[in-house]
Image (cartoon, rainbow, N blue to C red; front, side, top):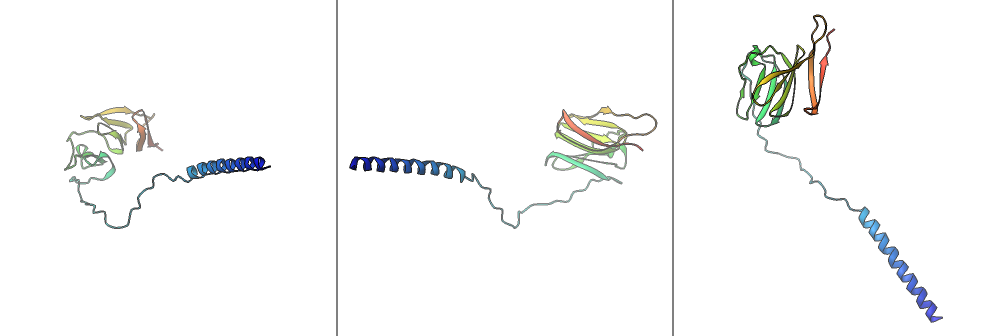
Amino acid sequence: MVNIMKRNINIFFYTALLTAGIFSLFYLSSCDDGPTEPVIEPGSRDYLWVVDTLDAEYNYIYKIWGSSPNSVWAIGDGSSFDKTIWYYDGYQWSTDGLSRNILPRALWGFSKDNVYIGGLDGKIWRYDGQHWSQFTKLETQGTAFITFENIWGTSPNDFFMLLKWPR
């Protein structure tokens, strides 16, 4: 009888130990929250904000896009066709001074050497790191013209242009 009790106690002990081990394994693995984000306290971030001005008469900026703080593009009507596309190199704004028959309204890029502009005349322009050239042109029948309103995308092979269709 004593041997039967010892055996039952051993079976009970090992069963309890096994159950506790399995419970601990599942419980502890489900409680892992992983790394937590640090809490950002309110207060000063010591940002330095600087006001900058594009020095062009009658210049209305429609869009700004940049690949870094040292490579930013801005587009607008400008006071003439040579002041519609502006570039910021981290120090100053400039234009290349070339007169293009484009009134840009849409701007998007994928890198500093791959930037696109859409205008009021259905033309899409591309900057390749050296110069702007006409990429393509969408045309309608008759005298109506296409206006591009916005560009966005995930890669040079996957981007979209929102256009305002003529009435």
